[in-house]
Amino acid sequence: MAEITAAAVKELRERTGAGMMDCKKALAENQGEMEASVDWLRAKGLAAAAKKAGRTAAEGLVGVAVEGTRGAVVEVNSETDFVAKNEQFQNFVREVAKLALTSGGDIDALGAAPFPGGGTVAEALTESIAKIGENQSLRRTAVVEVTKGAVVSYVHNAAAPGLGKIGVLVALKSEALAETLQALGKQLAMHIAAANPLALDAASLSPVLIERERGIAIEKAKESGKPANIVEKMVEGGLAKFRKDNALLSQLFVMDNKTPIADVVAAAGKDAGATIELAEFVRFQIGEGIEKKESDFAAEVAAASGVKAEPVS
Image 1 (cartoon, rainbow, N blue to C red):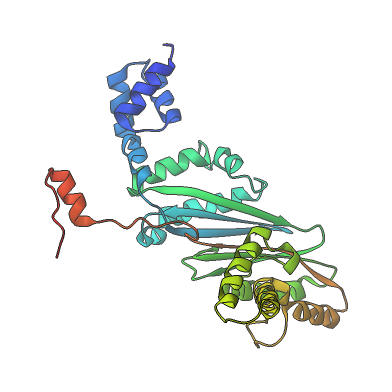
Image 2 (spheres, rainbow, N blue to C red):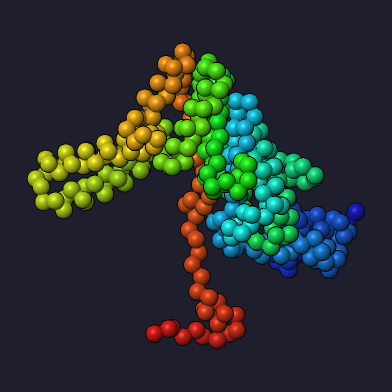
C-alpha cells in the first residue's frame, strides 16, 4: 500500500475542497494516485460537498428521541426550508437523534459515532450534503435524564414525528404514575415551546445576561429624569420583572395566563399524591443565534462576470 503523505492530502484538499478524512480515504483507495483520487472524490460527490460549507445553513430540523428516562435533542441545519421536507434528510436527523441518546450531549462524540449502514455520523452528513446539494451542519445536541420519573418530549411545527422547528425536553423527578407525568410533561413542554424561558429559575439566569439587562434598565430609567434613588428602584423593579418573565418556574402558565409554573407542578403533585420536581428542560429552536447572510444578487452576478456593479439610485 502506498504511503499517504500529509502533503498529498493537502494538495487533494486544495484541488477538490473535500474534507481531510475523505481525501485520506480517496488516496488510500487509489494507491496514492492524485488524478485517480480526484476522480474518486468527484464520483462519490464529495468534491462538491466541502465547497458548499461556506453557505449559511440556518434552516433544517430539530430532532428529539426518548428512551426510558433519558431524552436527547439535536439540531441539524440546512440552507433552505425545502430540505427539511426531504425524506432522506428527515431520516438522517431521526437516526442522529437516536444516536444522541448515548453521546452524553457531546457534539464531537456524536459526530464520531457509528452511523447505521456504515461510517460515522460526520461521514453520513458529508454524504447527505453531496446527495442533496446543500450545505448542512450538525450544530448542537443535549441530553437530559432522571433516575426515577419521566423525560417528555414535544416538537412544535412538526415536519414528521419527532422532527420540527422547535424541540423541547422536560425532565420530571417523581414516583407518580407514568401517565400523570406524561400528561404534565407535555403541557409543560408546550408552554416552554411558546414562552421560551431562559433558565429553570431566577438564580440560574446568566449573570452576563442580567448585567446586560441592568445596563438597559439604567439607561431607560435615566431618561425619566427621576432622582437617583428613584432611578435605582426603577432599575431593580425592571430586573425583578425580567427574572420573573424569563425563569420557567415563575412564568405564568400559557394555558390560563395566571398560574406560575411552580404552582402548576405543585398542584399536579398534590393530585397525584406524590412530589413532582421539574428538574430540567431543554429547548432548541432551529437557527436561533445564527446570523443569516444577506446576499446581494446583483453584486454576486457582477462579481462572477468581472463587471463592477453600479449602485441602484
